[in-house]
Amino acid sequence: MAKDKKKAAAPAEEPEQKKAAAAAEAAPETPEEVPAEPAETTSAEPERDEKAEWEARLKEEQDKYLRLAAEYDNYRKRSIKERDALRDDIRSAAIADLLPVYDNLERALSAECSDEAFYKGIEMTMTQLKAIFESMGVSEIPAVGETFDPTLHNAVMHVEDEKYGAGEIVQEFQKGFRLGDKVIRFSMVQVAN
Image (tube, rainbow, N blue to C red):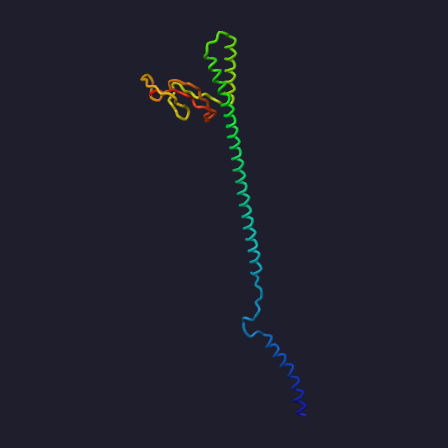
């Protein structure tokens, strides 16, 4: 019977040994093999990274928008400036085309005329042309008695005369005109000393 007890005890021990061996095999032997549990901070870090990424994108888009707005504003200002310059150039060209008419009317007024009505008509035409020039912002460049200015006057003759100062304009051969600060035609003058 003792043998029977041993046989009966042996099978009872075997399942316990198997369980212990299986537990030993399942348990990791080194700490490296232990799977790490996800920490609570790792879930917050991706949210922060994503938020920082979106903020960077937003800042980049705002920067693009501000640059585009600045470019448009510069374009608008440049367009206005170019349009004004073009308008002044066109007006200057039109006035330059009318200046020979002004010169002819001025010559007609300086010539002797026996017909009073004819002379009055030329005088009225000249007055009207001067009024139109004035309304357009065109002004005559002062010459006789002024000091010679190469930005306004074109000296075609020179005279030595002690009664005039140095660089003084003695005579005007052709009137000069300007539109605002832009010279349309230089005054043709004679300069003393």
